[in-house]
Length: 73
Image (cartoon, rainbow, N blue to C red; front, side, top):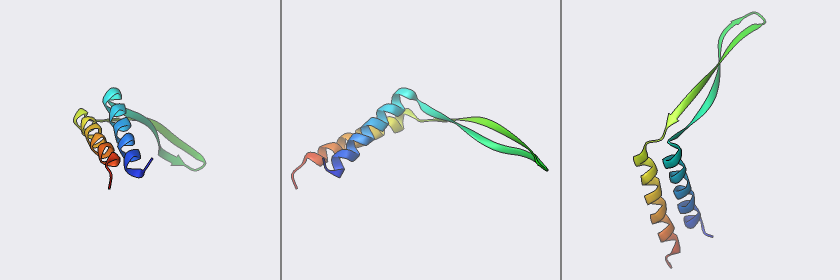
């Protein structure tokens, strides 16, 4: 499998994942205060929304790249 086909498949999979999940979330740990040996940390949950147009664009681009990967040079 050449690099162009692999890139197309990866774009399609990422586009489908973004389309069906709508985004992803992660936990970020930050230091709020530091008083000598004591340290106060806070865990914040961040959410990143993936727009549907971006997911559909990734799927379409992946399909184009995948088709170009099957063309004979």
